[in-house]
Length: 216
Image 1: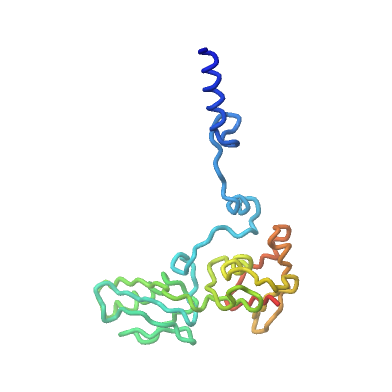
Image 2: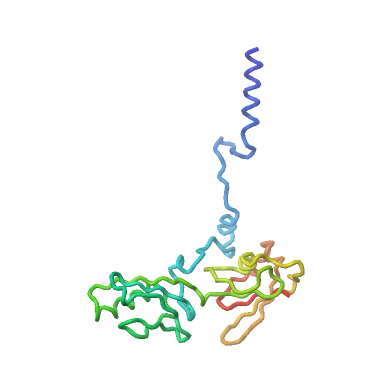
């Protein structure tokens, strides 16, 4: 009777252990993120990325962006300002300051140096509150066509996903990217099936500000 009871207990224990939960050494296997695995084995696959300009220390400010410039204990010279088409912002005491082409950290350092003419030990923080200069556009047979913010290292597949994917009438064999390069607009054909299958990582184009993805 005792031997029969022991056999039942052993069988029950084996049934409740999930298949594949342990390796041959008896240790639990780690569940790996497929994207992390792909990034480690193929450097052309985009790795997880920051989701906003505020998360990217190397973000290059551009025309159309909106900046919050805060000077500690100096509300009169703090505020939210847009970056004009000429790449400059206008600040109290300082007038025009070049902002486009630099990072928030470097711009804060520039403003700090210039403010020392008027303030004792100014402490400046610059935050991009609207990254309007970093946008890409999706046109045609897309569920949600229009402009989306370009995240750092964003690829074509990620942009399509962020826009809801294709409509039922999309002709993905003829999709392409319009891009301005050295002042000229070029057309970059896209092999979507090869890109999404992973067979041709180069087809998963790394997007640039102003790119337009067209899906006929």
